Amino acid sequence: MDTSKIAQYLLFPGIIIHELAHAFACVILNVPIKKIKWVGKDGGYVVHENSKSYKIIIIALFPFLFNILVSLIFARLFILNEDIFVKLLSVWLASSALFFCVPSSQDTDNCISTLKESYTKKQSFLEILIKILLFPIPLAILIISYIFKILDKFTLFRVFLIVFWFYLFII
Image 1 (cartoon, rainbow, N blue to C red):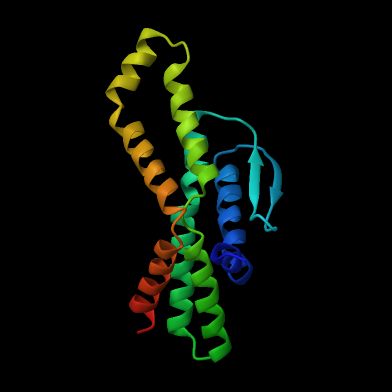
Image 2: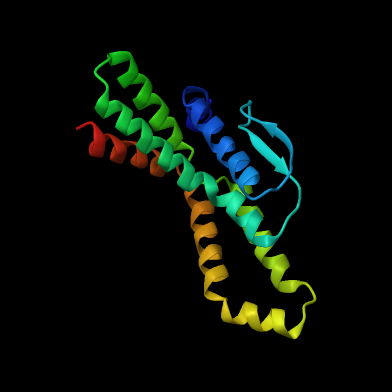
């Protein structure tokens, strides 16, 4: 069994938090959800209706911010609580949230394909002009998506996030 599978079993709450972030983004953006699998042998997923490009991108990348926010909440709980069980639970949940904060390859593929699709479809002159003026934003999203796609493959980066969390809030 490889390290990523072991991490999935040990840190499964992070997968649930990750998928919860996708679902939460769908609800906020009013994008209907077709199916949710919170956790399973190969992780989890949220299937939603097709929507506008910016909504799909927000839904795909939202777990990064959401999971970090969740880990900060558990850090606060860790600091404020004296009960050892609550402290250990806080560390476990924060670690698992951080481990799965990086958008998955599927999430980044959704961003990249949505951006490609939005630039290749037939558009009016005004839409083309707006996209030219706003080009730095999709370019930044594309770069971030490719960085996340690379980072998704490195377990060491995820471990670094957890160690950094420990350094900031425990040590």
